[in-house]
Length: 333
Length: 291
Image (tube, rainbow over all chains, first blue to last red; front, side):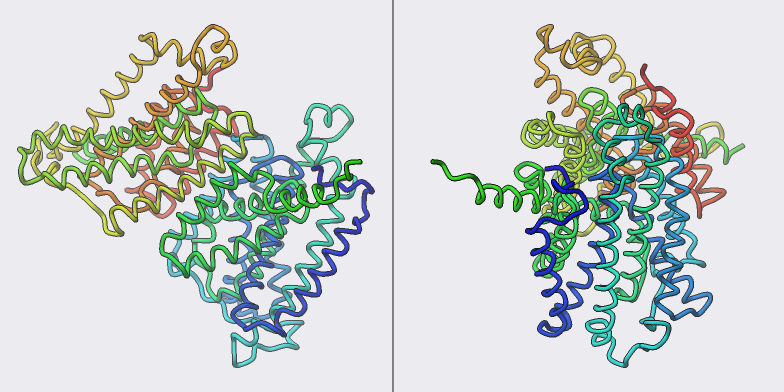
């Protein structure tokens, strides 16, 4: 169940096939599905980027953050501030600024958090994210308080693709492909990171901190870098999320949003590379339909989480993996 | 001078509630090494049950009897704890601690909606209790007697809990288990039973906290989550697993909140979380960490 395949750096045939099939499906979505469906997938892709970033910490470094809402929210609020106070409209500028903003916060919070592990790490990340939340909530003359800040649809590709009059249409085609490209880039970059010597060092830290230290890994510095990279991915997700939602409120900085990111990753399975992506998209569907179906959607989600922890601790990806292994088991002779 | 007295009493009031919540959180962590994220919702559950029970009989009973009914909230939360621990947490003790945290997070979501399902979206309250006691004069200021009652409950609970943990046979078993679960088990202590008892006791305190605060602030959806976050701050400052820490942490947070609300309302919460972060930074295991 190690995230690394037998041949480091190479995709297995199965993974390659799966990735190709997924790419075809994702490319075809806006052409065959209704705009609402496409936008739902788009949300899923955005959350998948956050989940990828989060899993660099949980799956690869062994640190459970309960404060990733801070970086997602930072990515979102940076965009909202730039729109409100500087009148920026270019999505590229937002992406750069959003990543820089979340890197700044993650760098700062990381300095404190990576000194600890296990439950103290979780609580500390939670407490620090709550600082940002309470500021966003209380400093309403800057952040709009609970009303949040509106964010109009941005222009794409250095202003060459202006928002069309039909916002839904714009989001479901142009913006969808924009997000898809950034999603693919994120997946590739993260794949390279976790299969690099740096990624291997993180896994060594996760598996045995003392041994990693003894073979010369600078544990705290590596954790800090992982923390910042994780925050950058999550911040990018927040930045991409804002135009979809059209509004940012303190809710996305609240610790329950962090819990949601944790949920994505556990649902998908944090011991695999692909699990978090799968989990984010699946969760997004689950929530979209649970919210539409009943006002007791927290009950549905909570029950799913409880069942998952009790019966499927490896998540969706782990279960699929076990199934594949079972199908490929050597025949009894 | 007058405002100072009121501020101090308000701080003690907050601290009393916070202690009732945080001591259970700390106890459960100390014994079982689990941070129960659903703990705040058991506090809310206590508030709802007490409000509901008292609401049923409020006209037919004398108000002094209604005070006894506050205990219904504590007992209901304890009963819930006694069911939840063996059912949902016991299967996870051998797994990585992430799973335990996730399980209690799932429980938090479920309990939140169960309360909405049972009692609807509107707040419940039983202000007959706080109204019945009116106000009294302390050191020249008038102050609601019910708030004094809550402070007293917190104080009595702290003393009882201390006596229970440090002066009874059960307390010895509890402390032995928290120090070394395997050794305790080898010496013949039924660890499973100690776990369920500790969890139930923690929930009882939380439920009591919810019940006594209810006549003032009502039983509201979301109160559990808010309380949980403050209780985290308390136990982080005081030291997870330490009862003395929970008491001192509750007093610190109680006073900072009261000062904060008066002088820096905008950043009051931020200041609290920052204090917690600073304490963790300086003394990772909290002010009253056990060796």
